[in-house]
Image (cartoon, rainbow, N blue to C red; front, top):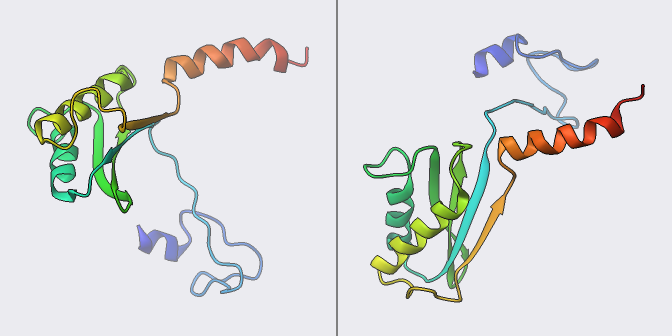
Length: 145
C-alpha cells in the first residue's frame, strides 16, 4: 500500500531521509514476508509460447482441473526453450507430481514425446517438514549451553 509507505507507517526512515522524498543516492529497500513457497521449473525445447501458456494454465490451481497450491507461468528461457515456472504453496504436493503433469500436458500438445531427454526440471527449496527435520538436527550444534 503506497499511501502507508508514503506516510511512514510501515517502516522507519533512516537519518537524512524524509517521508516525502527519499535520497536518490540511497533509494528504498522494502522487506516483506510471504507464506513459504517452493519453485518447480520445467524447461521445454520448443518455440511455441501459446502451447506453453496453455500448459501453465492447465496446472495452475485457479484453472479447472489445476493442481492445488500451484501458481504458474510460461516464459522464454532461450531462443528455443520455454520454461514453465511454478510456485508451489502446498507443502504436501510432491514436486515430481507437478513435473509429470507438465510433461503429460506437453505430450498432449505435441511439444515433446514421452520420455523426451530434452526436458529439464529444477526443484528449488525443501518441503516445510524437511526444513523442520534439518533444523531439529542442527539445534544441538547451535545451542551454547
